[in-house]
Length: 415
Ligand code: ASP
Ligand code: MG
Image (cartoon, rainbow, N blue to C red; front, side, top):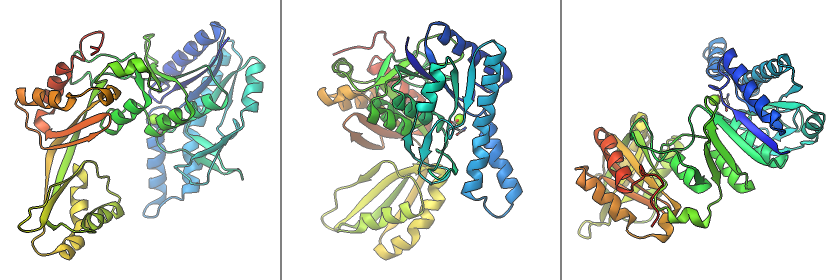
């Protein structure tokens, strides 16, 4: 008998029929002789609807974070009760638990609280009494009893953290996709579902556009060594296993290709090449709460002693970035100019095998050049190479790179 934590996301429990489907899946797992803790999200759309309601009743003023958490926690509370009732109606012993009832303690940072401690003895008792435990995702309580929520997408975190706390044998994240793919199958037709991927690769893919799971949950899983599977609740296909890297994972050079559209490039030219300038520029950007991604600084032109700095932001942030930079630019001198263009996209290749293989960048760039795609910016990490290209060429670019690394072939090519 194993102890299994399953997590079902909002779309998986989005209708009464889907809740019945989830209940049947839980029963199947139980019938195989396992103990089950099932973490559920709010039914799809519910959290957004609650946020809208809050905005409607408060008008011009902001709802307090404390009340926001009391409100948002009801989304998941609805689903746990419905799922437990459904299981009961099918003749099974199931009980629902809110995050607080399950002993999930957090800090007091409402709407994005961090889990500080889990006391799982109550959960163990219920399981040992023969119950299926249906646990509300995305929520907890402070030591003095205030209800908190863990940030959008936080049910993943509840599942991973509970799996660590009860030392589960397996943690399954059920969602509406079959797992993690070598590339977005809507863009690249022969994209393949990966059998396994390392935590670091999944994190890099998430940060470059492949949104499968909340990154905080993956970081948590890495920290506590929780091996988990991402799979679909809508079919019986096996999913993708996420774990610490193994030696054999390194023989695969590229695990996947990510793309991110709607990017913009901001370039500041004629910047004096001396200490403090980059600090001023990005200080202003960060104060405006704008997420910067790639940053490229040129070597300075020796005659003028000036340089150019470019970085990417989401295209919706262009105006905000220009506004935030105005005072800094005045400060940096009269020859400093700013230029912002949108219509660009990012393409990344990710793989821990890069650490031990050379020539990956050359192969990627050659594939892009053969496809007639111009590269605008390049940046690299130990396990990722990212370029920006014209947005209208991003699909072509992704297909070319995916094919060059033979990711559509099965099994993935080893070198
Ligand atoms: N219901 C929350 C949200 O929509 C938490 C979750 O679904 O994981 O963000
Ligand atoms: Mg959700």
